[in-house]
Length: 139
Length: 477
Image 1 (tube, rainbow over the protein chains, first blue to last red):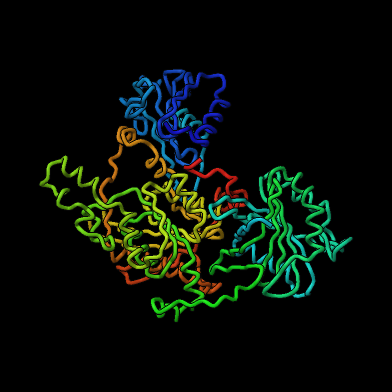
Image 2: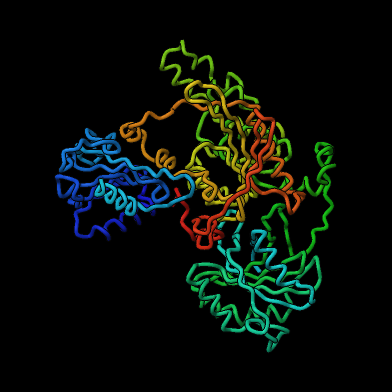
């Protein structure tokens, strides 16, 4: 197993600092990355549920690459009963494709990619997660 | 003096330094260079990162023992910054003369008096001094542990490469009849430069194969070849000297059983070995280091540190990302080559064909600033394939891109010409330094000016530029 890359370790440290009150699980991958799961993350008012777990993968290119998609609780629903629409994709599994040592969970996938090619934007996994949570709270 | 090291500097810093040291008054002037440090198999390399000019009468004053000196306050301030940023402190001044230069006894005595204390101050980094004449430089570099080095040469990375040494090299060069016709272009000294040059070729596919042929025929003396793939049947129209035997075509034919096709694919020639064969046919004396791996390996990075030039002919954005970091961190110029063939999605008609030779140097052409690296593509190339397949919600285009040897030849020949004139010092100082895009459907050429961004992590003011080994390397560390 490759040693976890410095960028992955730093990103995990940043996530731990920010979510210091929440359980955060790290599952090192064979290629120097890691699967991360954060429990009990608050959801915004549009959703019937108050909290969710959030799972995602930090690749060996972290923090150079975009961090996406994120995976959240499978029973996510809007308080006003709207259907979940893209980029919220129900019926998924975390981790996608399976991963040694990580118990699979049914999930909704939230796929928000960086789509602005006009500049090089290095966004840490924490900042990307916060941006995605903010985006969700505004649905 | 126990050994020799190299100093690399980008042209804009060199121009600024020369203008400060030689303003035409015939006097001595001073400056401080903060440099990165690179450990290589050829010895240490210093990579000039920042230049602080000593202000006349304020930082640079009449000396107590010598003619001029830098004030202790100025020295201490710059040395502390070197300590904090893990950079090498280099005090700079100039002497008279033109093509030769050496430290005076007074200079060397001042090193003996001052450098031990400076070494303590910078806590583990080397300190040193450089003395310049307009066409020469000498150095006295002190490393912790009483190791002391001179500067073997200084490489100025600009439109054309310039080499400064302590004294001119008057050896007579003779190229012999083999290179007679090209020596008539750049002289025996130019051929000698190529013979002693070392290049990296990342990706030995359609473009890299042509680069190997062209550089081998030019007489380049040393190569680092990097590619993780073997020759396939569909590569044969584009790989120089490739045969059916290289692709094991009789074993991988569709009619063969699966096990035989798999075996044939495993027995096919490695692309690095094919390229090495091509180079050795052109120049049997060439020294070739081969890496049957992607670029993102520590051993590859170590081998590339000593290259004079890097040709980026691999498709992936991971390789581009790493290449861009190495150009800026180690001050090694390079070129990124590519071909793009765009088809109309509805009709399939070809709407655009262009090939590009994009110069990437420490002072221009950064791939991050010029949108040539995508964080999304980095992501796709960095997650395991089963994961990528499982999370794919929009059908990706997995089909192989179109590729034709004649288009590859456009960018390859442009890039090798750029290299040849850069190395031999013949490129005009005001030569265009951006991307040359050939548009064969229009029989035209487009010149694309490179952009820069102050927030860039590779080329901006707070970037990895010139930091040497003491900055993390993306995708490696």
